[in-house]
Image (cartoon, rainbow, N blue to C red; front, side, top):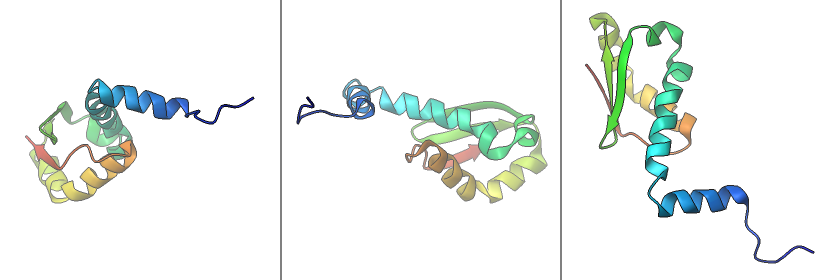
Length: 96
């Protein structure tokens, strides 16, 4: 017999993560892991470091030309990364 107050396991896990303030680091990790999937292998080879601080993604690049191109399309990149994670994790991207 099914109880009336049952919940989905995924909902319970989300609640526990949120209560222990582990949801934000998890989403940040997912976003960083999504970088190669969203931007592709060609861009990843010029990327040396990704980090998130205060909802800003910092990306170190080896190519100044690529840095300029990515800067021009950073809003689309931000939207794609947040969409891939399913939550608005970042509000801006800084290319170094």
